[in-house]
Image 1: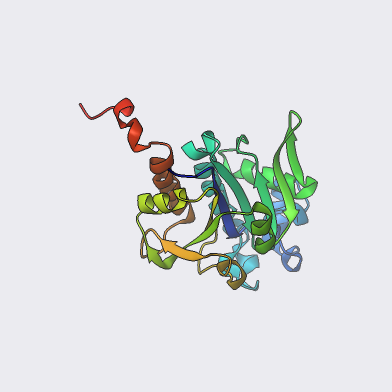
Image 2: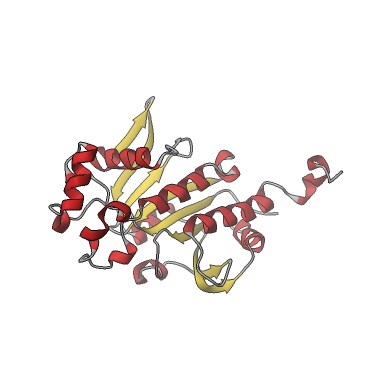
Length: 241
């Protein structure tokens, strides 16, 4: 019988950060700040708006994509695993910040409102409602996060990992009480070396690059098939007419 309790999802090396100091005075950044009515240092870096300013940034091709995190979180927090209390979700950023998400948080569906929420989180360190903490931000590297979570196993995703269909991966994860899954929430490349070494094994659900939110949705669905729709309940679920 499976010992599975919950899956820990970590969106690792995420392309989520405030605008770096060296480009705060760039015209595209200043124009965005004026439009938003906020100081430029409080804004999230966003390639769709700050592309010209980002040309001189180190590893610019991996940065400034809050939309990736937005899509991934909508997939994760709306999943059956999350609704059933079997998913714990974290965002680890490229700057070694960690966002812990309450599974009951309802994130804005509109991208600009999502960015506004995360900008508020960076300002206040937490987002609360009704006496409950919904989002919490802490300075933390990936090693410390994993140490705090204490998972049964750490599995990373990569197009170069061992090819495994989502359901088979779900079956593997379900053998552990508290498996942790690392999904890279960045547009190009691989995990940082410090992140990759945390994984006991690397797996792939497709031998070519996929968007991070596709990886999240497929793996969660594969895991749900195993832990939420057990074979013994097939008679209750019904069959095709």
